[in-house]
Every structure is written in C-alpha cells, then in structure tokens.
Image 1 (spheres, rainbow, N blue to C red):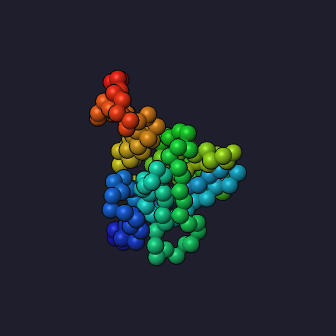
Image 2: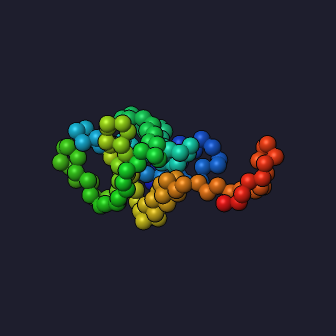
Image 3: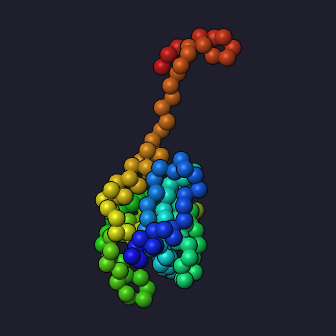
Length: 152
C-alpha cells in the first residue's frame, strides 16, 4: 500500500511530450566529500537535461529538485550497494550517473525497485543519441541566391 500511495504523491512531468520518466525510491547526490540521500520522486529527461523532482506530501523535507545537463554526463554504471559517510549500507539496485559541471564532479544515484536493466539501457541510449552528430539532409540543390549546390 505504501508503494502505491508513494507513486501517487510523485510529481507529474511538466509536459506531456516527456517520453522518458522513472519513479525512484531515493536519489543519492555525492560530490566526493558530502553525500546526501534525498527522498523518492520522479526522474525524467526534458530539454537536454536529466531532472529529479522529489515526492510531494512527504514528511522529510531534505533537498529539492536537481537538474544535470546531458552534455555534462561523463559515465554511467549500475550497482547493488552504497555505503555513505554514516557507514549504513544500502543494498538496492542503483544506477550511477557521473556528472562533471565545471570543476565539480558529482555522482547521482537512482535507487529503484523497477527493472534496473531497462532503465539503465534507456538512460545510456538517451545519452549516446544526444552525443551523436546530427545528420544534415539536403532537400534541394539550389541555395538562397539561386546558385546550384553540388550534392554531398
């Protein structure tokens, strides 16, 4: 019952065009010196960024929304355990996303009970597609000045 109620309290995505969204049970934000475990919520991809929004109507008010640009993602991985500074081990499925923003390296952890392999594959596909060079397609062979362009 708690899981069903918790998902109803997850915030909605800002736009109906958002195709990729996942419910998470916790969100880990680690910069090497400080580690923060935030409450569950929703993670989605919108406007070339990975966005986390915390669950509504939750008693613990730690942390707020977080956004990481896809261009700044360095590496992704998945694991089963996490030991923060207080040495309490979390043994759950975790997807790790390493982000480098300027000189600050941060690691995002998505703790989920969902199909971790499918979520991980989706995130990797999104990042790889975003890094691909766009294909330039030429529809006509005449430019604005009326000069014919040689097809590539």
